[in-house]
Image (cartoon, rainbow, N blue to C red; front, side, top):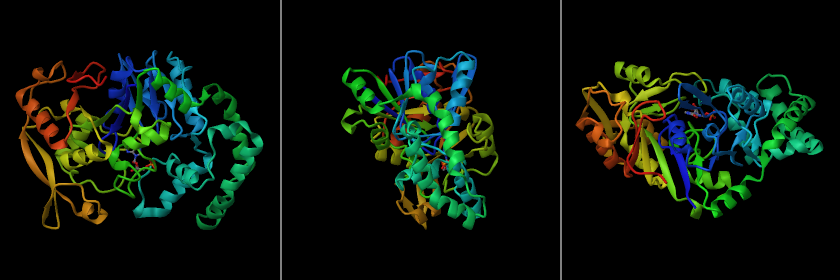
Length: 427
Ligand code: IMP
């Protein structure tokens, strides 16, 4: 019954695609359990680079069944264009399964996301503008449209009517926009229905049966722990639960079934969008991390904010996810620095604080307390085992492991599929 959760331990973009892909060959099912096309995985296979936003990265492994769970929000136009893009490159996508209970990102959800952000002005969240938040809001408000609704025109029309009833008032009266016509939305959504139908399945039943049969199921989180709606830096978060518990609700699998929870941890820190970020750098070191690490959003094309490694955040991720392992990524990006600062605690209003404060105000005031570790200059991209790493790189990894509270079981030393050091097997 090996069920593994793989999730971001920071603010997302830790390199999950590479980790998922590394396991791809031995995994039977790869399941996305939350988020939508706000995610961005870059997967490198051979000399081909794939940027995926909605589809699970397991879609590239021929032996693996990719699953979009009930907790995901699905933009049908993005889904179909990602599928046809992969088909054009010869990737077989026929095994994909989509939960009939997953919610649909409708065109009006995208509109609402954009106008709300504009309206917020300086207080904006910096969302990806893909309609994610408004779609989850509709779900919780019980006016959401689910994948299964595409197959009953009368129900679909009633539901779109219900959703637009209030929204059109807000769009016209508050945001000074034109009202959205129910018929147009229904027509557009019905236009996707037949193309999506072959993929729609009872994913909860299928995944639980797979686990009974001892199949290997990998739950792939989008975004990261600090972007979690409950456990992240609210309100500068996404509107779902990337943390480990989200895998259970977002896929319909009980917590007793999860055998391993792996946190993907970048050897430094990045963040996209607004919100507090204690170790953020505004100098040439930040610029160098961005340049060397290629820190530009896969989904939005926005430059990522960059900073040193923050062990307080890593410890927090270990706690709220019950992490059993870390996959440390992008260690090679740090090659060439003589000294590497690592944030070991915060100073908040003159006091040293070891753990992430629950108070938003305190976190906004947190200043990093750094310890400096000696760097290395040797190329590490060819390292195959931990002992191949230069001593200072080994010590950096060991220090991070000690501070973060879970074993580092794999290390990414380059973007390629095989540029990974495996210390403990995840299976
Ligand atoms: P939303 O998910 O589009 O609602 O955006 C909410 C916040 O989450 C914004 O700060 C986004 O930049 C951030 N965000 C959403 N998806 C990702 C991701 O995959 N990586 C990093 N940040 C993300």
